[in-house]
Each structure stands twice: as structure tokens, then as C-alpha cells.
Length: 193
Image (cartoon, rainbow, N blue to C red):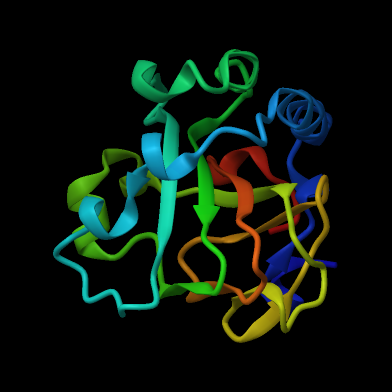
């Protein structure tokens, strides 16, 4: 279904969508379930401390590729995924997002001024693609995400896309961590959006 119809975009509109599927397979094989992201990942609250995040936010990330540059501090945890992703046409950023149990991703748009001042890649914001790396539930009320209040859930290994200019947010009401790849790719590499 076209993104204009429901705010979600079919990831297969990306001209090289098979590369996203290959990245998923590499990431799933490389994922270390024993890695404690709280010890090594950046806290969103600390990274964007000027934003009014509510207390229920416990959201962390490994920024692997930022504005097409590999982040050596975090890529060592995902070496094969980072190497493969760095060759994906149009890819501007790749983050691994960790959402703790019983917490939220507050509603936001990826191109708000405070974020673009902090991260250069957002100035040419592309289409966002998320790959489920470790999804504790595919029941939308338990673990879900919305774009302009259109809710969606997905399973480990599923791939979903949307326009980061749109209002979006998520929740993890499970007792396990939610792990996704969060990718930005230039819009010019997409058809029918």
C-alpha cells in the first residue's frame, strides 16, 4: 500500500529493497542477546537533553552510521551489519534502537529543529525503515508504533517504512527489551511515494 494512503510506506518501494532484506538477515545472525545495551548505548534523554521527554522514556541507541560516516565507537558491536549497510545506496544513517520494557518513544518528528541542529543527516531526512531485530510481541497494544496515529506492530525480522517528517512514536508495554534497526535512506531512491 502506498504511503499516501495510510502514512506507512511499503519498503519494497525502495529501489534496492533486497539489500534491506539482506541487512536484516545479517543483523539477525549478528545480534548478541547477551549484550547489555544500557552499558554501552547512548541514552536518548542524554543525547537530546534539550527536548521535553516525559519520565517514562528509557530509550537507547547505537548510532552505527551517521551522515554516511561509520561510528567506530558502536560499529564494533555490529561489524558485519555496519559494513554491509555502508554500501547500501542512499543510506544516510543507521541506528540500533533499544526501547526498555514498559516505556515509550515519545511522539516526535525526525526533522524538528533541535534534532537537525544535533544531527546533520536529518537536514536531508529520507524515508525511515525499521527492521525488527528483537520484538517481544506483535500485539499492537503491547509493542507498537504509530505514524500520524495509524498504529502498527510487527514481528522479529519484519521490515516497515514511513516518512520521518510525519508525527510518530511507539511503546513497549512488555517485560522485555525491544530492539530495531532504524535506517534513513534518501527519498530519491524510492518509487511511488
